Length: 230
Image 1 (spheres, rainbow, N blue to C red):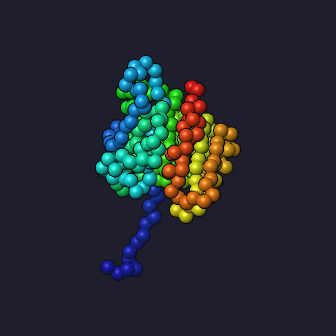
Image 2 (cartoon, one colour):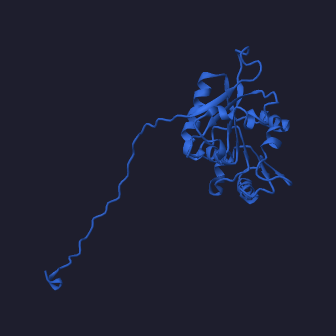
Image 3 (cartoon, helix red, strand yellow):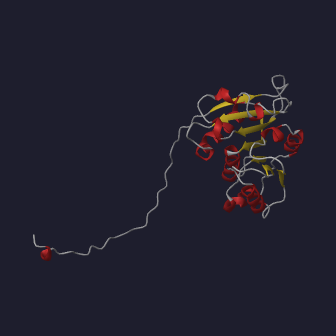
């Protein structure tokens, strides 16, 4: 066909605005370790605070036993903590923001099965887990009585979501993996909306601040003072 004989017709597309409202079901799975405080078995009446600890990137996987001596079950295990402690494991190739629904489902299940005070649920997380702490608290602002992010940063644009959430954050000034500015900028953003915010910067430490932080008995005393008022 002679190219000169080809006719190009302009077609007018009709575009309509639409919306979809639908209910979906999502199956989640997460492995976790769980410990109970001394006296829990005997305490049939009364409720305990719950600490959920989110690990860093190197501990991802499908073998939850690798967390037996890590984080709050490692550096902090010498302390007698008056909390139920749950340590979920993020699957390989995933991140905590992708496991948000699974962690929240775990919290709901622990409340259902154990003596948990729904007004005393706390989040602690290190590195990737610290980012997960910010993310979970921002997306579930009515759940946590306090959060403790370590060596991480958060979503500055969503800082207002944390206006009712007490925060004690920790970071190493010499951190070359997550620059301390990521933490200070997030803290500054939150402080525009509330004042129950603390930031501890270790002047001589880098990224790994787990031992210094989780062995600090003052941290757990502070957590005990924090309670949601619904």
